[in-house]
Image 1 (tube, one colour):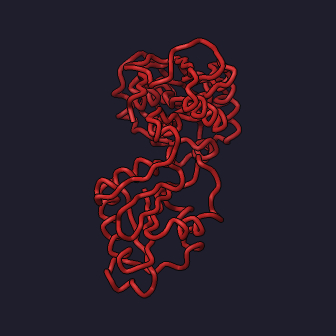
Image 2: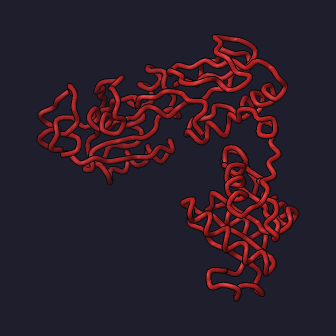
Length: 347
């Protein structure tokens, strides 16, 4: 994860080095930039190429952008580059005295609110968080979903959900998965109603008049295929089967196969097109999986293990197969489900 810190004064440059150390400790790879006249303060400091140009480059490559200076500088720098709350990086402003840490952009999904609190605690400052759910001590559904890597079906519905919660309305919750612990304030289990959220695998199920759909990524797609299989050939099997199973592509956590397929262009193209991570296992790793699998003598001869799709799905998920080996035109697929329990207190 990349982060950038920009400063414009001597004190800001000095504070930026402290902020860098904190972010690095959080696991970020942090670069610090300042005005040309203050680059000499420390060898780690780099020259900024101008507010707006630097912001554009930072938006393209960073998860976190921090400005040490006035909020106005930060706002003017980022304004041309703001696109969407689902994709924009976390942007935070800190005054050069290190008194206030203010999340400006992507407070929930981008994690700016949480990062601001942690930075404030580390430098002895006050975090200034202004999002309505936070200041009212209410559940921030978009932040919770992002933290747990759940797909948010509609940002409009997420906004309506949060607005209703702040307004004191009763919010319904329906889950296809077991829930542990208490539900957040203002939320209760319901099968239908005016507004609520559903946790499941199918984006088409809308039990509430205004339904916020959250899709936990709990399914692993195991795939095997012949050499030089085309992307369209993979799609002709996989997409209809997902429809039959009523599993959205957004509920898939990753694609898995045997390492002999790590350069298979059609498979790599499928993963890229649907923005899915792809993982490969050795034949020995697949052979170690426990269970009853659909064996193939031909696959055993070519690959070194009797089954690829089912075994790779189990290897990645540590769960159970819900769709056994299915094949078409030289492509095989299987789906396994990762065990899951919904915890609204997990952040």
